[in-house]
Length: 427
Picture 1 (cartoon, one colour):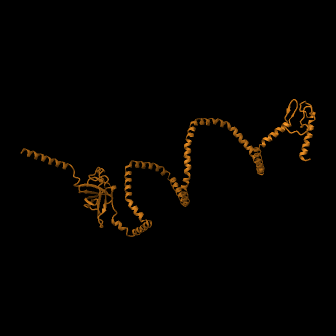
Picture 2: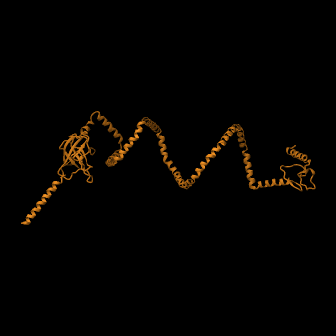
Picture 3: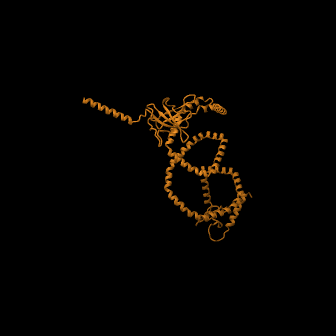
C-alpha cells in the first residue's frame, strides 16, 4: 500500500514539473507574429493568406499606415516549424488571382542566421521595408494598353525587337544567367552594407573634395567643355584612332625586345650606380670647388665674347674665300685622290724611305767641309763650289772658312744660280 502511495506521489510531481516547463517555454509553433513594412498594401485584405514556399502557414493581421507613409502589416504564423523568422528573412506581396486579390509570401531565412529582433518601442519582431517587395498591380499593366501608353509601349517593343533581332539565343542565355547575376548583386550589396563605415568615410572625403570643386565651378565647367571638345575631335578622327590602335599590338611586340634590353641594362647598371653613389661626395666637392673657378673665368669668358664680336665681321667677310676654297677643294678632289693613291703606293713599296735616303744623301753630298769643320747647307747651291775636292785643290772662292775676309764666292754663286734658272726657264 505504501509503495502505491509513493508511486502516485512521484507521478504527480512529474506531471506538475512537466506542466510548469511547458508553461514557462513559449510555444512558437502555435502562433508567431511578426510585423512587416511594405511600400503599399493595395488589394491586400486583413485575414488574407500568408504562405511559405506556396503553402498556407498563417493569416494576415492588422494593416496600418506608418509615419513614413508605408504599410505596416502583422503576419501571424500558425503552422508549426516555421517560426521564428531570421534576420535574412524576406516577404513579398504576390497576386493570388486575375481578380487582383493578393497575399503575402515569405522566406523565413536561413537557420544559421540570428533571429529577427524586436526594435525598441515595438511589441513584435520587425521586418524592414528593405526586405519586402510589392508587385506591379494588374490595373497598371492594363493601363499600358490605353492611349498614349499603348503607342509608347508599341514603340518600345519595336525598338527592343530591332535590338534583339536574330539574337534569340543570346537573349535566352542572358535571361538564363540573370538569376545568378542578381544573386551576386545581392552579395555585393551585403558586402557594401558591412562596409558602411568605410562608405561613410568615403562620403565625407567626397564632400571635402567636392567643396573646392564647388568653389571653382566655373573652372570645372570649362574643363568639362574642353573635355567635350576633345571628345568631339577624337570622334571626328575615330578612323585614324582605330588604325592607330590596330597598329599598337605590332608596335608593342617590336618594343618588347627593347624593353628586355633596357631591363638587362638596368641590371648591369646597378654596380655602376653603386660606384657613382660611392663617389657622389667627391663629385659634390668637385662641383662646389668648381664655383670659384667659374667665377674667375667670367672675365675671360667676357673677353672671349668681345673677341667673338670682333671676329664675327671678319669671318663674314671671309665667307667668299671659304666658298672659293670649297670650290677649289672640289676641283682638286681628283688630284688629291691620285696623290693619295700615289702616297699609298709609295708607302707600300718603300718609296718614302728611299726618298728620305735620297734627301739625306743629297744633303751629305752638298755639305761643305774643310780640315776643320763641316757646314750643312740650308739651300741648294748651284755653282762651281759644288764639285768635291780635297783641301789642296779647293778654289780660294769656295773655301768655307770664317776668316772675316770678303770673297768672290757670292758673285760666283749668283752666276751659277742664273745659269740654273735660265736652264729651267728655257732661256
